[in-house]
Length: 577
Image 1 (spheres, rainbow, N blue to C red):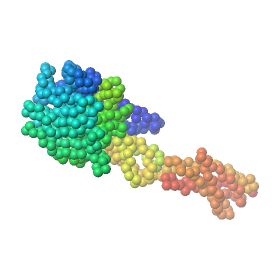
Image 2 (spheres, rainbow, N blue to C red):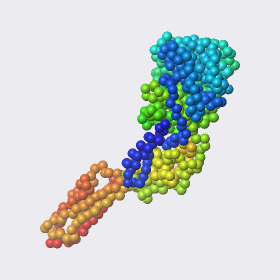
Image 3 (tube, one colour):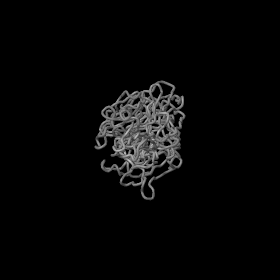
Image 4 (cartoon, helix red, strand yellow):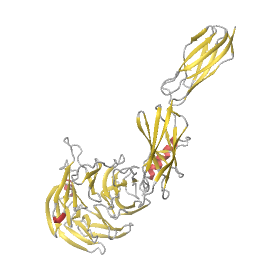
């Protein structure tokens, strides 16, 4: 597996090159840490349809639908929680699609082309539960309220599957039942706590505004409760559903929406939750979503390219700002993206099972990821300092501090996030790398005079809790300027005088070349000479014919501007007759 470490290393390298010689290191990549344990199995399948987990016997089942021809045989690959393949079950001349495991873990239900079969999860002995209407496209299977529900698309060929009329059927109290619920497209099913079941409709040519519905499955009944369509009056915002999941307690619903990203809804009425999840990284399209059984985590799968993360694992509470654990899947060892409906958790939240596929969609991998079981505290110590001592507009400023953490050393350096708040608002300064000794340096170039307050945050990760923010206020002054003059000590009245000089301005480059005021003072009085414009290299020359003999003083002045102090310099010359 290739985690997001690759993208962070690249960002750190680029930043180090940009700031070479400053002693400062700033990384722009997100602060995320990879799981220490991740097993990957190459799946013996050429098409994916379903994933199911037996928590009692610690088994993972992955189905290869193999639709396309009515005599095709399907397969179900069986793995341990550690990624060892135990066996491959073959469904002779009947493709297999939906999977569901009974609550006691003893039975695996599989939706086949023309029936529902059951497999013993330890002996793998197969029995037929019930015949079903013929399915050409692949069906969903879910167990809820002690009953088994499955979808049956009606299509004569796979070319009709996207818009096929799909029925919700069930094995209710042991008998095959057509519930009467139906609509177009490959309807998705998901069971949840409290005898609830979700049914969601993918976007298709016959459903421009797809629905999501919650069903009560208790007592062998199937009663629709909340339902929602998402498009507004202009037809914008329609659901583009790829996956759906209940939270561990059933109170929330998360959707992987290929257009909107991760939606978080209240189960009771399917309204938007008061606080949602942050957007997926730019370039990532939502493909899968799953809550851990212990209620701690949510996994958000995506389709992305290059160094953009394909998987984020983060706290299930959307208000928790802990930085997600990020994974980038690339190439022949990982796959390239998380498949739709391709993630499940173990009941205790100790493992996430994620199926990935390559860009062509013909190869598949099973990733078994173990989030850390323990989180440790982190804290800023010693306050923040800055250098140079006087901050100057338009010049680099280094803000330094120290972050300490409990627990073992992280596999990758921690990151802190920094902002600057001044009279123009709050400005994001990106992230800075924390060194092995806990120190970090944030580089900035303030461009506004007055007070600037720097806030440094550690958002935490799945191993470390967030730290309390630390702040530091700096007074930003105008940048200094200097004028240096080179003049003769004596001159003749008839020969004239030439004075050369250099003007230097620190901080932000001047918008235009500086224009200097020249004043001559002699025994006859004081007068202003023609101004001189500083050359591009900072040099200038003053030529004058003095009007009298004796001591003559030339004073050169620049008044300054909004970000630069003014400066002045004088030269005294004795003029002979």
